[in-house]
Image (cartoon, rainbow, N blue to C red; front, side, top):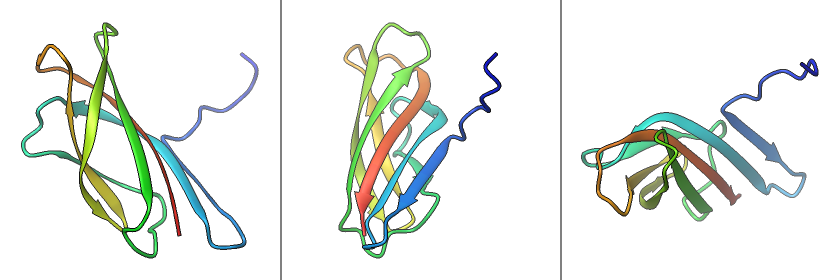
Length: 100
């Protein structure tokens, strides 16, 4: 190996002007989780006026699951995940969020 430590599942950068960039992965998410899958950010935003994008990588490796934001909180988000075949499957949710 290169001696590079494994990256943590969550990362964040806070800039001097207050802009906060956060990204991460949530393992063990399930499609059609009832009612959704929730996760928390490393740092809280000042308000829910932040932008977030996510995608789910399914463990089968056959396809990528889509996700939609169901609930935004300053400390995290709730998402609903599905794939085009509607199979119940688990995977990893990857996200990036930016705001103040």
